[in-house]
Amino acid sequence: MCASIKIRVWKLYSDMTTKKTSGRSHGFKHKSRSVMTKKAPRGVSFLLREYHEGDKAVVIIDPRQHKGLPHRRYHGKVGTINKVGRRSVILGVKLGNKMKTLITRFDHIKPFGVN
Image (cartoon, rainbow, N blue to C red; front, side, top):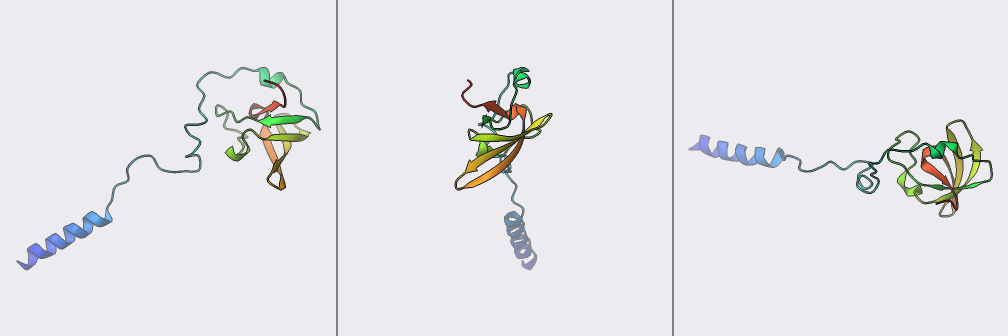
């Protein structure tokens, strides 16, 4: 009789502690997984655009290129180009009352006012 009570208590305790996870885990990009998906192949026209210091550019995140990917809070923000490199640009983006420096690749920006 005493052994059956111990087994019941052990079984109850083990059910409470070994809960299995269900569904997808939440991570850093959890909220943007479904929002930022594109299946079409990328063209090369973005590489032919020329940027100069002082130009304005819009941050449009392209999920097909993971290198130089800015945080999703900057998506749609307009910034001023401070420096142009071979593969990247440095943008000054206003976020609230602060000016943030954003280092990103050409894949993730578009000139301001261009469709």
